[in-house]
Length: 115
Ligand code: 5GP
Image 1: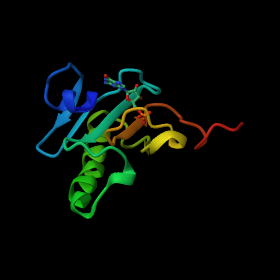
Image 2: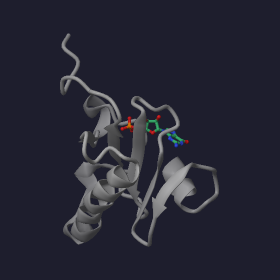
Image 3: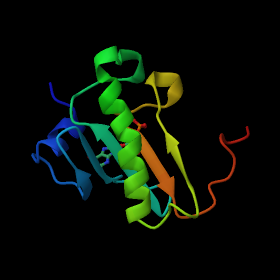
């Protein structure tokens, strides 16, 4: 069964897409945690980082090139930003279609919440 993100790639459900090419799609997170919160995903459905294979290397490298370009386009390249990939339960992953969170537009604080 396709993930909700695969349906976004296919245009079957709406999303605010900021970039798309034959390998990746970038769109605004529906519940943004920062002034800029973009999800960048491979169009190919890869469930988690734990499912990555060597043939995905070029696509996954491309995610970072697109992240840099989207950050510049959205005006946060100079001020800085954070890239996050969650993996499985303890990593906090909710949607099992690998995605890079691009967060910025404010000071993001420490890496993890101190408990
Ligand atoms: P995860 O916790 O899996 O790393 O992050 C999943 C992210 O996907 C969350 O930040 C959540 O707000 C976002 N999200 C979930 N469903 C949708 C959706 O239908 N559309 C968009 N644009 N974002 C979604």
